[in-house]
Image (cartoon, rainbow, N blue to C red):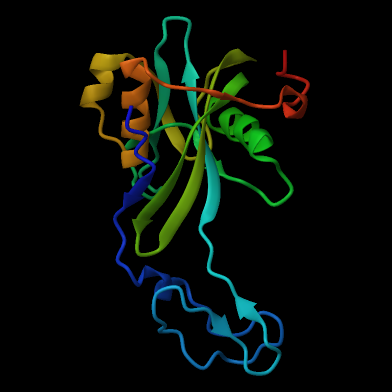
Length: 201
């Protein structure tokens, strides 16, 4: 099984779109914003270094008892609006990635889940303004009431045939669901001690 772990749609110097104008430590204006690939902005006054890192996130493959997968339609005002995606989102500083998975699924689907494990980690260089690194988890429904929320306006359980016809927001979601329906997906178990007590078994 090919894991498809890097998805690139951005240019090689896309990082220049994320450069800072002023030093966040002392407020001095940075001398330049246009830099070569992997070059870092450094403050001439206080030596602060701006490390330009991807945003970390999670997505979750939620299975039904019939082995279907739950996806959501993004609102028209969201980035990549009116397209479909797996539930997920960004990891907050105070959270573990497992806690993020439970929170994001609850916010976007109304469901509580039981996480089985990690199935992949991917780099999404989505465009010239967005670069994410995403942990992809798999799990099952453990409770809650299904209802779209946050930036999802519709939820749908899909089988393999329906999956082939969906208009996905992210190439990574399509590829990982491909792997699921091919039946060759490997799972790295998570440490169950770090699942919220309300959904851990």
